[in-house]
Image (tube, rainbow, N blue to C red):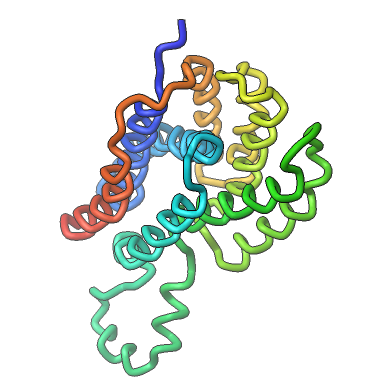
Length: 249
């Protein structure tokens, strides 16, 4: 029986993300085995976010507003992200000196952008794909140019998960189109869609990312329903939990 709604999947993804971020930010204080376990648990989050993004894309009443919301919260989350993951090391003794050289500060902060930028790029890519093939039989090959473009953009702007993230979103999007809006993915489809984040995202030690394949079991239990509507809670949770983790550290 399919018992998991979109709300349940989103909640699992958020908890998994929190666990992952705790492992990364406090790695120095953790044993190797605990770090491995926490990172493995954290691998569940991104494929679930990709799947939910695609579901939201096809069910939202206002795609433009959805896209704008992703971009706004991506921008709002960037400073907390840079602080939490030390891309903007304000605790360094020479940080105030570096402020006199804005280019060096910008270069440090530009090392990697938060995952909401990846989701924003993936959503924008889907908008373009829909304009190219709004009706008729879907063909995955007609969207290869759009896929390549946004994979390149994600790598240029160094968004979290990069091209692997865009590819994961694209595969979930293609699965949705090919199954003609039916709810639920088979385990085989889920494994294929999740594969890019497992094969193309290297997180040492290597076996840790394989745990993301467990998402295929969760997606098999998805009932196609949205569930509780706490939309802004999840958007706000992302930057706020990064701020809290930075302050604790």
